[in-house]
Image 1 (tube, rainbow, N blue to C red):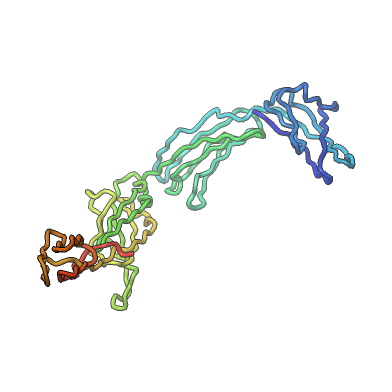
Image 2: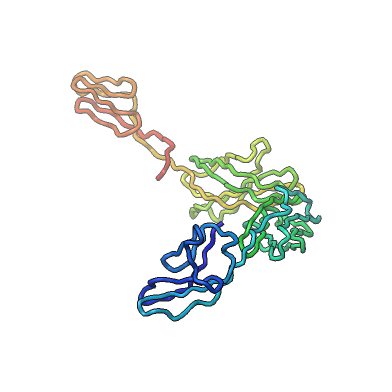
Length: 329
């Protein structure tokens, strides 16, 4: 691996050059392949080996000269850390029990082992043993998730991960709730959270948020999801063009889990579109309807069933409102 030794420079007028001293002698870069100076005076080593060890000072110059050398910098060679013991990929333990997860670095005295939970919902208690092992005692529901073990020394840090599943708890919250609305219905789907080690069931909770003066206060109501539906449900009996909130609640024999995040959706509206009714009264000439189109003696008029009524000069076409379910924008 490479390395950089910076030279602390503040120069005005601008920096002209930097001279380096290593172990009391002027540093000749031609004797060290891969060693270069950057424009800011830093000493760059493409590959660090035994030659890099030593004590360094740098002296910056501009058009006025120099204020003198920097304080000495000692370079100590040390191997990066490595794992001697790594945790398994997955651990499963009952709530209330003890779980010890090993993680150790090499025997270097400067090596330090730390543990942290990835994306914790809230602060949780845990301990790190002198040998670097993670101690969870007693195991609680919040201990479930991904954990990271980090081994570091003065050179670098390395990391490894493990997954902890806690059994004997209420389910975890459902995620990725998706709502696809219709006119008087909504199709819901979601991803189940961990079941806590026991079969879980779901209920969908619904609340109407577009409230008219006649509706009064609207409360949440729930619909039990049949086991055959898995993680999806069609909620019917809704009002058109109305906002609703949806959430999923999971439950098993150990208790009820938290609600999923709330999803808000608007059911589709209803449009009235004019359409041809199936007769045409001729004023002059020959006029007849062929399927969904009107034809006159003088010209061919193509008018789709859904759309505006076109009235040819030679015929009277009667339009009637026909109800069609459409997206209301």
